[in-house]
Length: 150
Image (cartoon, rainbow, N blue to C red; front, side):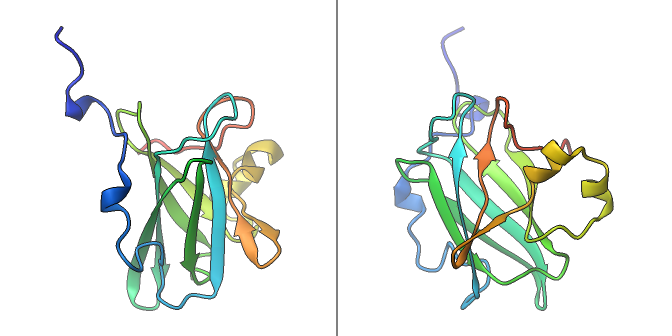
């Protein structure tokens, strides 16, 4: 085999396509900042991932995206979604397909969360940290975020 083709991996991503104004706003003028990091199985930052939030809102489905920096950090500005959570897509190098998870803005006790044990449940709930919500995404390892098969 001659080597990998672009269709065999999701990344790496380059910042040139990620810097459009307002791109990290799920809802323009939103009042909630969600910040976090994407970490690999060893706990090291993934510096070239892309995180997308998709959520229901007053004007239909809303979305925004943020690339990660050298420390794996991402940040999005939104409003509290009507369903209490946003669907989260994670794109990163080495993945053949994007990963899908959820970011709950609090613990509504819905059927998805109720089906998980306490440790797994905690990986989906953003934690208040100052003026923001912190949502860490662990791609593998002991603290791996719960991902959904579609």
